[in-house]
Amino acid sequence: MSIALSLFLPVLFGIGWLVIQLAPSVAEGAHTRQDAARLLSLALMLGLLVNYAVVLIAGSLVIAFLIAAALAAGGWFFALRKTGTLRAVLGLGRLAWVVLLVLAVLFALLMLFLPAAEWDARSIWLFHGKMIFFNDRALNLAGGWDQPFASFSHTGYPELGPILFAQFATLAGFWNEYFPKAGLLALLLPAVIGLFAFVRKPGTSGVYLLIMTVFFLGGWLWNGYMDGYLALYAAVACLFLGRWITGNDRRDGIAGIAGLAVTASLKNEGDLVILVALISLAVIVLLRDRSLRPLANLISGRTWSLAASAFLGPIAWMAIKKLWHLPGDMPSSPTDLHLIAERLGQGAAGAIATALFVKAEGAKAAGIAAVSIVAALTVKRRVPVAAWFLLLTAALYGTAMFWIYLTTNADLNWHLGTSAGRTTLPVIELLAAAAFACLFDLEDPGGPAPRAGRRPSR
Amino acid sequence: MSLKSRVIPPAVALAVIILTVILYPQPLNTLQALGQAGETLFSPDLFLQLARQAGTPRAGEQVLPPQVQAMLFLLRTNNVTSYCYSASIGKNEEIRQRLIEGALPARFRETAPYVLMIESEQAPRPCRSLASREGVLLVYCP
Image (tube, rainbow over the protein chains, first blue to last red):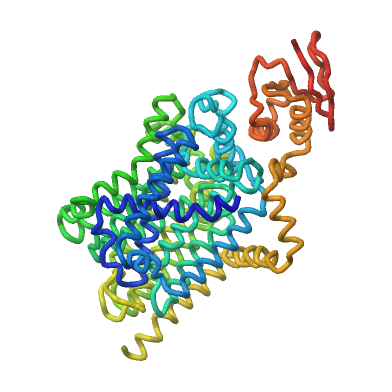
């Protein structure tokens, strides 16, 4: 147990740092606390994603552990070889480390001391972890992925969470309803560190960001569901992409791409997050620059290899799904015009809107974003471009969810009742991120909107 | 930096934070849960008890429905590695899913000779009752 808990961060960092060596310029120029947080978060996200890819490709957790250990050793070799690397990466500032440590300990206690009790956590995510653990610590067909007994668990869903559960259980040497959930810590910390890349003096906007992400999601981050992490990583990824639009700093772009890759490794909805984020990015860049050329600069040169490493896992899982004939689990028929007409005639639009915006409280987040926009317009007479990007992404994601419910193959009321509270989380988080972008810009005395690495805050 | 530009942004952010906390109860609920978790650090006996629990194989199965706990007991005490269940158990989605995920590494197999049934159900003819617990029956059908 203690081995798993003490080693996962150094191993993930080592793997991630080795991957970063594919494009060493990404690691350069970490002068501010925000730069350090971005770099550390990026290394940990890449570590998570490459670890995921290694398990999927190797199939065996034991072999994957050996490969991961070798990769991590390589990463630490590079990190220790160059003087000042660790200082740059760990330079988040004392207060940030204290907050991070307190949050990590308290969340770890809740993950470890509360048993996995809720439906999807047990029937999907921990069940898949258990299937890997009790199949000789291997992810292969012998685990029963294509067998009818497991079909209720949506075996085609992405497996980053279950693989982490199985890895922690393997290191502990047993399965129970508590300890495998420690794998959630490996998901929590890279995202929270990523949030610190947006916290600067006076820090009030940063407090809002932490409240609306970590504290708002709360139980979703320790109950074994992946929905909270999908929403958290959607927000982190889009915050980085929003800052990339503003500052054109490629390091923000690559951190955003890594965040998007994590969403695709967590849930099928991650693919939707990527789609709407890319559409929003294209629209905003096109409107601002009358050209899509800046998008080409997002990934160019050697940063391609980082993006490719980040998406190795999701691509490997897509290939495995196809090879094993696992279900795609599309819950709706989005082009069924007859169904759409029938549902609209039954007043489904009102029912869906009520579920998403009133019961799931999406309207409140929209209201808070509206207040922040009004404040930005009143005080600064502008809304930062990052906020427009985040608003558009939230709107597109919300619209897509609305459409999925409208064309659901299941009973609409049942579908809404069992999932709207979870599926609205990314919309709420993206709206909260948009509000944050306005507050962050307000704190910037006269300068352009959110920009990293330009304002040392030590 | 003027006083205005130093005071207004944090004040706006503070107002938005207050609005958020008024509209959404979740952040305070999380704070409360984290606080309760933190209290365990200052109560060594409770902390050790919870830590021991987290380090015990199979611990935490009390969250499963009592019927499922009985089923797992029957499968384990009879060293069953593959099992199937009666139609009435199959129809109860909660019991079925909790059984299948809880019973691993024992797996559901449609042709398995070990069958879990509700005691009130009639066992097929050549089947032999092996054990029962809390209204659940494990039968062997060669």
